[in-house]
Length: 261
Ligand SMILES: N[C@@H](CCC[C@H](N)C(=O)O)C(=O)O
Picture 1 (cartoon, rainbow, N blue to C red):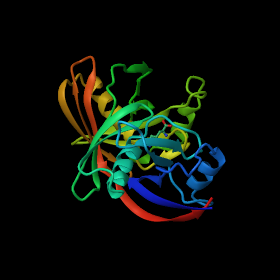
Picture 2: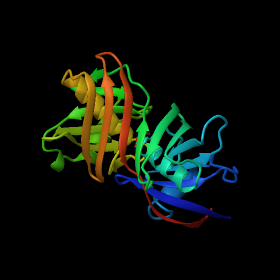
Picture 3: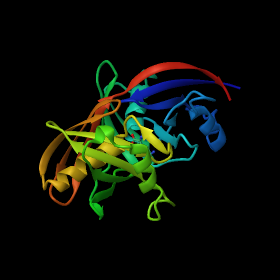
């Protein structure tokens, strides 16, 4: 059977998008999902999303990691599916949709390639040695480092992600270095099991962890540079809970096509 797909990227975090409003695609097939995401045997992507009908919402986002397993929230994926919903004519300038971690509100620019996505509130940040550990829809480990440009993110990320604490459930590993204006972040992603060019829940975790690190409260705006471009995170922090968290950046359709499944 032939399947139409769309390919999107958000700061280089790339995804396959499928319009599954008619429920023609049975996505409970881990091997097929992993093959579609494979960069040699399939379309290629850090993950795949299915846009489905959901009562009381504009749509539902069903997300799988590149390894074929259902995942927790994907921030850049969330931004890309909002751009896809606009492309399909389902929404105009704003949307309320359902994802695995609950309802999300988002706004989209007129041209449709800049998306601001509200993320879940965060009230818990734990420590693991010098690192910060928090859940922004997906679990994240955040470590401040020096000379991030030359760090072996794959090797160091792989080692932490697979240590006795995190091996079973997995975690995403973010290394962060302060810049004059904001931060530079590189992420080893669970479910891709490799460094990706960007991670939306990851840069969100970094922005919150750095505010905590610097005892910064009030309205905060954090520009973040990643391998695939620029993202930003804005939020309010009262010293206890992070609210009104928005992840912002590009969400671009790259190509579309048909693949045999
Ligand atoms: N790329 C994502 C995170 C996707 C989920 C992650 N791989 C996990 O398993 O936690 C993002 O943009 O947030």
